[in-house]
Structure formats: C-alpha cells, structure tokens
Image (cartoon, rainbow, N blue to C red; front, side, top):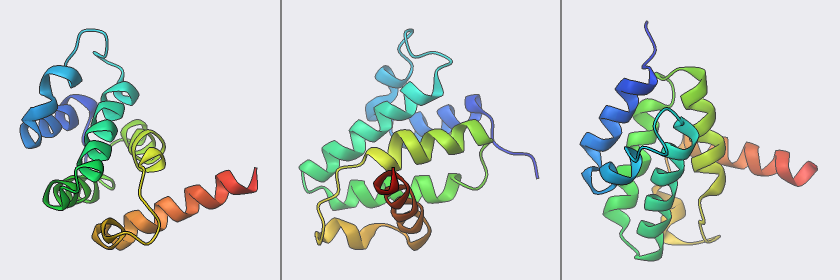
Length: 116
C-alpha cells in the first residue's frame, strides 16, 4: 500500500477542518509539516478548552484514520508535535474520547519523557 504523502495529508486536513486552512497553508509553514501539524494541535487544544467534545472526537478520529497510512515524517509529527503536546486533563471526560491506539501511543510517549 502506498502511504499518504504530505500534500495529500494536508489536503485531507484542511478539507476536514476548513477552520484551520488559512493558518496551515500560511506561506511561512509551507512544506514544514511539523509546523502545519502544530496548527492542528493548537486547534485540538482549543477544542479541549472549549469543552467541544464533538470537535475533539472528530480530530481524534482524523488522527486515528491517518496515523497508519501516512509516511514516517507525518506519523512522527502527529505523534510528537500533536499527540505529545495535547493538554488533556487527567481523569477528564475527554480522556474517554481518545481511541485506544492513540491513548497507547500517548502513554508510551509520556513514559519515555518521564524516564529522561
């Protein structure tokens, strides 16, 4: 199976979340997938702050659908620049909306950082 490249991923991202299109396509971010995914991470954190669980779930579903079908550079950015930087309150309702695979990735990353 051919993995989704940056151009296809970014197109899917801005089609699914047109609210962040302008920022993701900013000329300063062009070709810098880590910064583009950073925009997505801030968008997700804003959904968490606003208690917008429908939007949060949509974001998690998008990541879940893409994490295993994107090239390694995008996958690394999704894990490090997005999942690793989400501000999820412990024991909150939002924790239950994270798919098991993504929760496992987040826990592994947290354990790694804690061990350093």
